[in-house]
Image 1 (cartoon, rainbow, N blue to C red):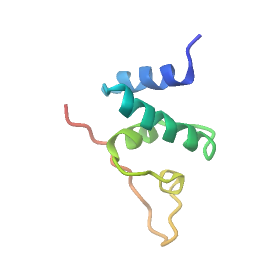
Image 2: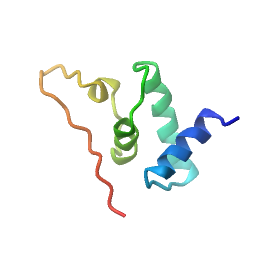
Image 3: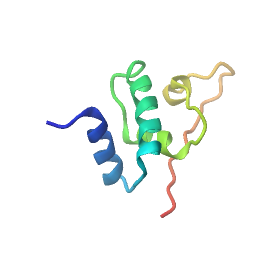
Image 4: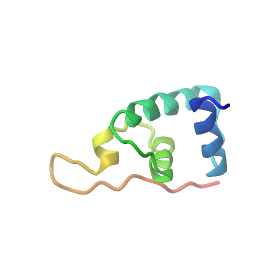
Amino acid sequence: MCSGRHAVKGRLKELGYEMDDNKLNDIFSRFRDLTKQKKRITDDDLKALVTCSDEISSEKLNGKETNGSMPIPQTSYVA
């Protein structure tokens, strides 16, 4: 049986992302916060967690902005 952290790391690897333990810890911490807000985490959510270096709010990932605009998380990856 895999831990949640191991599962996230494995899925990120499948999506083409490799990272050190410090970066993974940061991503997994924000991933856990996001799971409290959303029942289903998509690949786009994971990509946004990786590509956005600053804090990602669950409102942005859920598409809920206070100014009414629709956010588009960065999901591009340059290898």
